[in-house]
Length: 371
Image (cartoon, rainbow, N blue to C red):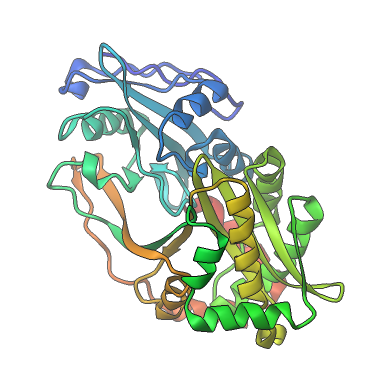
């Protein structure tokens, strides 16, 4: 069996041919990565669990912002496609070479059409990773397709909201404090708008850098959001909701969508107007917009296990809670990487103390090495 690496869909994609020995696909599967953008997006659209993180639009955002290389894997047998697995190849002098499916994505499980066998998917990716010099590859989801020996390297809460019941049912399912907050925002003289423009991105980013500072984290570079606007929002795969007091934007959120799934990806606000509950108004407007667009499920993204406040906020919208698992496979040792302990909190004090401009510089430097 051979793995044909990547026929060009983007100038950042590898053009070479990677030959994998027969032992790499003991299950009888072949692995290839030679789909062009339109072929890939058509293929994933046929799977009911495809999200915006599986699309070439998201891959272009990452490639253009950070220089990562898109690898659209297709596993197949003699008859048909078995699985589609989007990955980015990351090469960093500080964090090494690895394959991530997909970076800066809350979840992105392999899209499986037929049973790949207990180790078929892992064996194929591991052999490819060995040829590419990866330290490891990471799957963000997909436990059902992995062998029983797989252990998660990271775990998060996830929250999903079923949108199919309609607006009235959704509103009645909200926790009473959320309903009161929405009504207060609606009677506080705030205006709210849904747009996908470059100006909406700029207004969001001004709030975003201040919100990240409060949370003790550097913001991602503006170019990241600029590419989201051009590659995703302009293609009608998302929108930005902004709440205003007069002419001033005081809360904003970025929603993405593809297929039947919507995603609340980013939220930001001005804490000086917290009593107006603009965040709740923005979220409710985003939900209504997704319903109007025919989206069936809204995912609220991942939440750290130790972030009780954010977890309560998401549960209050009538969501169902789940666990998101990331799996890392060490290519050299041919084994799963164990879960790490919680990250130290000391660095957050540093970022909270830095000026906004310094935080932006740090973010622009550090994010190309992260995922």
